[in-house]
Image (cartoon, rainbow, N blue to C red):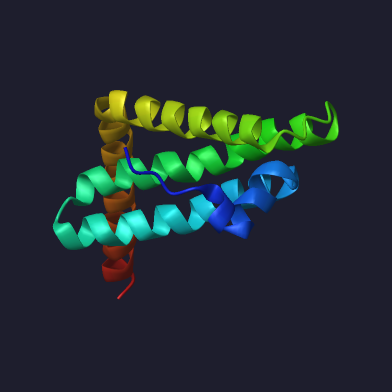
Length: 132
């Protein structure tokens, strides 16, 4: 089996062994960029409904990972970056599974919001017509 040794890349050695704070930074800001990229790519491919769920799950995982990973680093002084990466992967996977398994309820919720917005715009238009 062919594998690429990590010793060739100094950045990965440095990230995996020394800097646990960078894992939290990449988990936060990298996930934001990943959710934007996923939204754009899946919209281009024509999978608009799926892109909303996946990017929404990634966006929610940003806040959950900050809530979980920052106290692990600061309060419990867990500085093993591999553990933090595994925790982040579990958080992202659980958010994706949660969003994809609750698609039906999310559709009901988003459709009710759209209906409320449409009703309010119709009311505002009718009020404007009555004033004239």
